Image 1 (cartoon, rainbow, N blue to C red):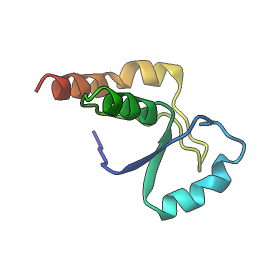
Image 2 (tube, rainbow, N blue to C red; image 1 turned 90 degrees about the vertical axis):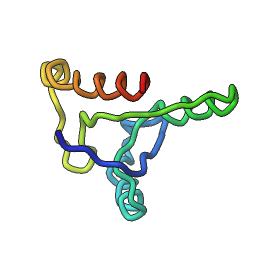
Image 3 (cartoon, rainbow, N blue to C red; image 1 turned 90 degrees about the horizontal axis):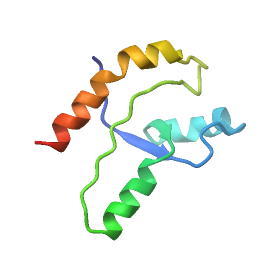
Image 4 (cartoon, rainbow, N blue to C red; image 1 turned 45 degrees about the vertical axis):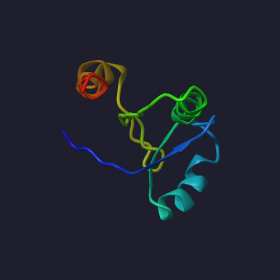
Length: 90
């Protein structure tokens, strides 16, 4: 399993028509991924004085257009769930 730790950009328009154009400055700033929920998760955690953690698994590559199939996601994303559960209960 390959893992990376780094910046993630939260956006409410993950599939924006401008995604490829926006990717260049994000990559230049060290952003590894785009996702839609982490910002809200961290905002709610801060508002309620709770801890939060986002663990992201890559399914689509907005620059190259590569994407995983539904079957690949079903069969391979279990490791992410196990990591999340281990982190939550440690």
